[in-house]
Image (tube, rainbow, N blue to C red; front, side):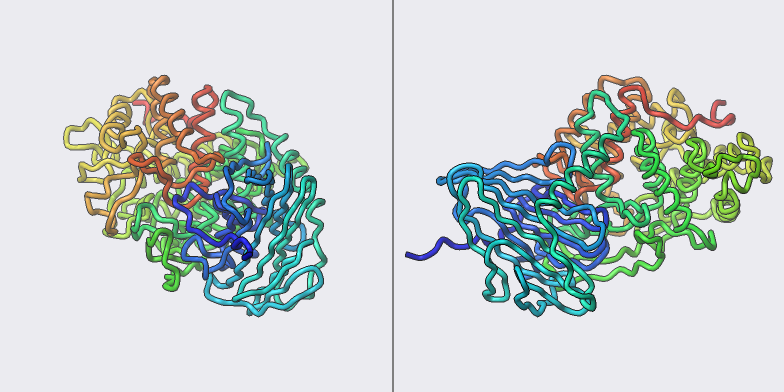
Length: 620
């Protein structure tokens, strides 16, 4: 009688089928069928050693599941943690698999524990290690308790209390567990030139991981109506934080497409400056001042240097060079190509990022994150070491705000005078005026105020549609842009200004799908230099919740918010985009900016959101 086949790899049907696990240095995605299809080690932006998510089984994965087709399966995170639990019920019994990555102290570990709860269950494990995004097959040898795999700079050790055997460039295991029995697997990555690492105790790692996340979540100050959803988003945001530097990546993945078979496939394993203000606000508002301070410190280190060379995005360590390349040997998720590593947007000119950086530093200052540890506020340079950098940045804004730019959405076509970009230039001058007036920090305040007012007047004259009723994407255009929803949020105009109200309603009419979710802009206008389209952008949809609440339409805002919560996958994760026609998530998963939007929108609906107050000219 032949043995039951081992569980092999099957491609995920939807992006939302994936679960996230991570160790605050890197991330893995686990499919519904129990396969780790994506894992980058030792960092978020390292080449993947499992890349089947963007290709096929020969690009690397780790399947672990019952050998026969289970009668049913269900998954969840253990409450308040990033530990994934998948329960299988088979014809012979019930078992659970626990997948997690212990917050890293020394080596990088991925732990998988199988427990039989009732009866007996036969399991199979099939491991295909492929370094350099699925291109390199390592040399594998037996070591005490498992196997070691080496190729170039990478060494991975897999240890288990069940026998591991090699077959056809894979490592396999077949085992049967009776009620109360447990199988343990630990994958550990080290630099290839280092000695074999000490084994990690899987049971101790589980207890330590559960304790870490429970203790961290206990520091959350939010206890409102949507606590469960906000807590899951906070855990996800923490999981996307690179612990050594405090940098927050936009996502732990690359090249998950924005539409089936499309080319809008980007690498989001980097830190975008424009995410900084809302991320800082979300962390501070929920009591996470340490994480907020670390994010600010990362920001100051990253943008240090010549302000003329300020970039849109940086690496998790603050490095500037992020060359973009295409990984031609990967077929792409669902055939969507190209698959990219790196991001050429780092070389674009996006005027708005100056406003975002200066807004972030103003928010940090107002929150007390700039105070010297000894509390001595007698010397200005000790109170706020960022001010000299801010003065250099505002000089660059003064020189360049009249230029067209590539805009918030990183348009890869002709530069334009984007209204949102100009408004953020206004924000840059406004925050400098506030810093000088409220904290006595030195600078040419009258000159800053004059330029701020000049920008405001220009935007209100040239940034409206031909009827003068609402704002448009860029000067001379009739197109709309979801970024316009942020104008009152940053204080450019008050919520009750008729132009703001008209803009919110125009965006709601022109850029929303059948679920009421918001697109960034109309891709069919052909202005972004790319073919195809995209789904509705979930961060923008949360901005719409803010906007509806801001103009007094609270009931509609809450209805939209509840629909957005329903768009999350079964684990509470949100991708970048959503397609209402078939209720599927698209783009990189999970997306930090989407989860930040959820946190801030929940607080807004409970009256906890805080807008920047409009400047004196904006109230006219």
